[in-house]
Image (tube, rainbow, N blue to C red; front, side, top):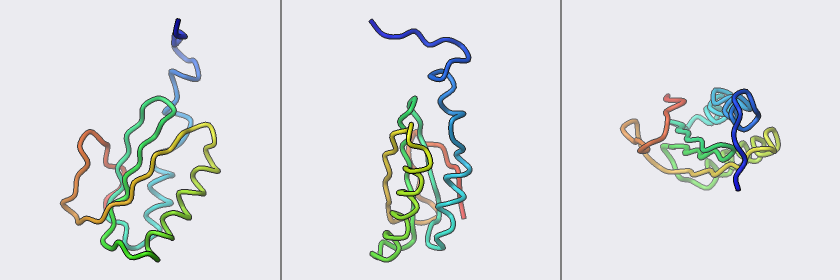
Length: 100
């Protein structure tokens, strides 16, 4: 039998545990990042980072930021994706939290 979510409980307010803008702020520090999309399902957070370049050095900088996010919010499970795209790139069912 599953646990019932109570109003005001930790499960019911999972989205308040971290700031989507903090994640966007960290990722936009990489000049090649064009957009950041986010989708949350409880404590699982899916993040798509759209870049203008898929070069290894660009991805490595993004991966470093992702590792910092893992460490900063250990109670969440993050599922990160880095995709090459442009200003027209969109991720279905995900919220745009940053656009260059």
